[in-house]
Structure formats: structure tokens, C-alpha cells
Image (cartoon, rainbow over all chains, first blue to last red; front, side, top):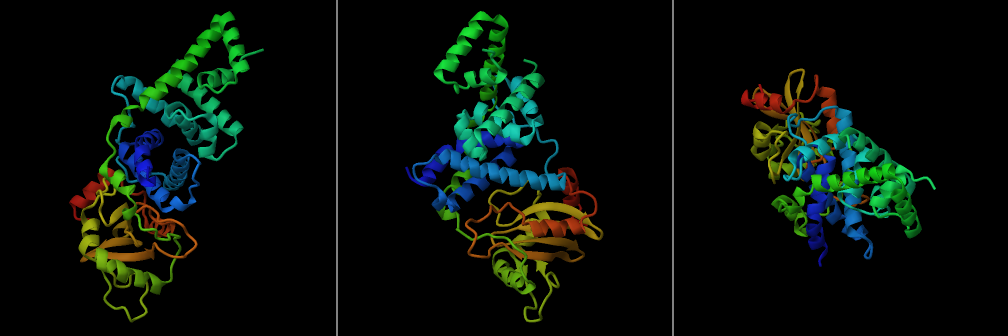
Length: 155
Length: 226
């Protein structure tokens, strides 16, 4: 499969990850678009035989961090403030909303760790690779994030 | 062997070695409270997986599929840096053809924004586009709207140039423009949606109060930014 076709095949997973990270569907797709564009222009940096999904997610993670920093600096962005949180499954919208709200309260580094392992289903090793942190760091973010989620979700 | 939360999590994530798994299995079998704890971790994992699953079934929007086509990505080097006025002017001439910046007096060692007026696509984007609802696929994208001490200003980005324009009596005046292409050292083209830091800094200097939120922005547009 050609490189760009593989990227297209990754779009659903990238969009889901972005929705966990951002506040609304448009920002999520903006983030995906930045990641895809960067991935294509940096295609030469991807090493054959390594995982493309982890590589693109790493690019997206970095773009998200840049974005989050500039937001923090601005304090406020010109975005619809009443934009709803990203909610997924229609099977149980109330539960999805509760989860999205709880996730939004986690510190960024815990949120992305939880997103990679619990939502995307990556292994610890792959998630640590995406985040460019040692396995122990990933693990402690994951543990803290999940304990906080269980507390908030009262389960 | 005491079983920690961390081990239970790793268990439901399938990250334990076989001996560790067996240790959890036997501890859980002997301890109903621990079993309940394990079930809570299992439930959390299941809920998290389900909560965001819907997007997987949606077809990806065309703009994302298009972004993955190599023909759409020009490998511009995109190291963004402040450029001397003349370089920015040269860039403006380039953008002028595309987006409608007019550059009336090129020979006269201009300072940035001395007499740059927006027209064409740029003027129309500044007039109409809402930063809170960016137009898909537009050549010019408005990033941020805010008030300065003497009226509304907006940042914009285009393929090769980004800048800052303020509304004056007779239209939008470009106060600053920065080339978005430079230097062989960089390896990628930044997304069209990104506003270079020096433009954001200039905006911050001019800004009175906070950037406009979606409602204030729509209201300002309704009054033609006056």
C-alpha cells in the first residue's frame, strides 16, 4: 500500500485520538489535518519497518502540544465557547458525555496516556514510543489518570 | 504477594507476563474485594473504548483525505522567522498575486504596512470569514480577531505569508506581513492554519483586552468591523 493510502487508512484512528484530546470535532479534525500534512512532508524521515501509526501519532502529539502551549499563552481562543465536548457513541450518550467531561479534567499528559492505551488500545511500549517517554513515566501517568477517572466517574 | 492497582490495570491491559497474570488470578480468586477492584478496572477500560468509538465508523471528511494526497502538499521549507521589511515586501508581492494584497510603491524602501491595503481574496476573507468558523479550503484563513485601541484587527495566514491587518475607514490595512517560507534547514511546511509566533506577538502588542470570542466576532462582522 502506498504511503498516502496507509495514512488515509489511519484517519479514523487519528480522528478518534484527536477527539479525545481536543474540545470539539472541528478542532479535532484541524489537528488531524496538521498531523497528516506534516507526515507527508516528512515522509522521508519515516523509517521502513517501523510502525507508521506510532510515527503519525507522535507527529500529532507534538502538534497538539504546540497548540496547547499557544492556547495557554492566549488564555482564550476565538472559538465557539459553547461548543460541546466531543462525544462519541450514540449507544449511551449520557455515559459518553460523562467520560468526555472526566477526560477533559485530566492533566494533558495523563489524558493523552489514557487516550493512547484505553481508547486507541496501544500497548504500553507503543504508547511510550508515541509519547517519547520512558515506560515507567507512561505507566505512572496511566495509573494516575485512571485513578482520577474512576474517582470522577464514581465506579 | 500484594496486588496493586497498577498490576490490576496492567492485567486488564494484557501487559502482564504469564507468571504475573497467574499471581493476579489466584489472588483475585481468593479475595472478593480484590475481584471487585479488578472488575472496576475492566469496566473503565470497556467504557473508555466505547465512549469515542463512533467516530471510527464515520467517513473521514474530504479535506483530510485530500490532505493525505501528496500533490496537495508542497514541501515548502517552513522555518518561520522574522524577515527584513524588504523580504516581507517581496513576499507580499508574491501573495498579492494570489490573495490580493496590493503593493503600491515598491521602490520607496517601505516599512511594513506603510501602504499595504488588502483587496481581493484577502480583503474578502477579512471582511467575511469568522475565525471561529474557518472556511474549508479557503486560500486565506483568519486566525484571531481582536480590538486594538483604534479598531478591529485580525491575523491571517496564507500559503506563503502570514500577517496582521486592521480595519480602517477605507478598508483593511496590513500592519505586518511575514514570509512563511525560508531557509533550507527546515523540513516541512506548516499547516495553513498556524499563525507564526511573531504575528501573534505583534497581535498581542496591539490587542486591547482579550481576543474576540465567537459571539463578539459575529457582532463585529455584522457591523462591518467598525
